[in-house]
Length: 462
Ligand code: FAD
Image (cartoon, rainbow, N blue to C red; front, side):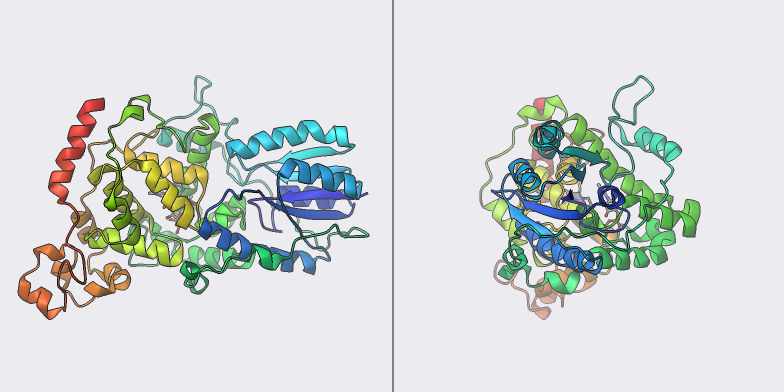
């Protein structure tokens, strides 16, 4: 009698608790991936998932196994499969997402009625959100003490053995064709040049990270450099274990890796917040922000989505996002601030756009970070600290190389003018072939006025 291995955002063979436990039973293992109907992920993530599954299937086949793909409601598919195959156990890793957790609980309690037991394993996080408590026994709401406690108490567990072989069942249950899970929409044509979904792609990013990590504090804020790991989509799909990252960086760099590991701490912190406040993607964490006077979104939302706001750094970021499914963190903050503060558009509009277009889209990270920028999150940026898109651009893209790459209309403009082309001398614009309002937009708003308007809106809820 076999065991089922239900994989979700843990599409890897190495250091995978559920997979290692399933292998350890010595029984035949049936890996299953279920696509909910309707699907609950965005377009860019669906592109990633299709590619990642191909890589996973190749790895599983090397172990003598395979993967069964099904579409529908997870609980009924799993109980159906258990009945069909006479499976006696179902192993899975938790995801910590509120909807998924409901399914997990239902699975744990209903499987015995079908003659099998369900066994859950830790999510791909440094800590489990119910384990880490404040001095008074509550959940953390501020990052720094959270991180301090985590860094003090965390020791990476020993690496789990990667099985050399997974026993196959006598007969494989029916699977949907993997081709049906592949997304090849026109907007995603640039993704393949940028990314290699799957465990091998994640390992390659980790190798790069091992080289750059000592300089991470200096390089991480520069969108014009390859100064970050770009591990986020691999982490979002669980193609690499966080414990593995910690172990490898620690062995090689010791304490020098801490500024980077702290970012993994933010990932845990947002998951911690979502776990303790499941409404995080839908509702302001801080109660006073729940009645914030956002404006109805008009053409400004579309200009932002298309990278046509007239603010070069914002446009560069939004176009990088569209073309590659990823945007540099510094630019995400600038672009998000431009939407929620300069335009006074509800952060949930931005969250939804990112959800659809990011290859690393993750409920907790996306919502947590949007709320951080909007000022409404736990331990958020203070509302009145409003990003100035021009100053930020001059500081973090000093030569304008990032802008030139993503907003080619402006490529010929000199560095002094590129961050705010509306301030450029007419002769310089001429020489660069730019006619504002024609081949590059006039700014859709004036930042200084928008800033005052945002502060006035904030006064209403303070
Ligand atoms: P690195 O700098 O190499 O960091 C390493 C890892 O640490 C990342 O892969 C990520 O897992 C984690 N990390 C880094 N910064 C953050 C952060 N601010 N919050 C949480 N985790 C972090 N990240 C997502 O993974 N998914 C999202 O949906 C997402 N939405 C965001 C929305 C907004 C408005 C903003 C401002 C940020 C968002 N981020 C999100 C966080 C961050 O921008 C990305 O994690 C980061 O840019 C990924 O690139 P990297 O892997 O090269 O990062």
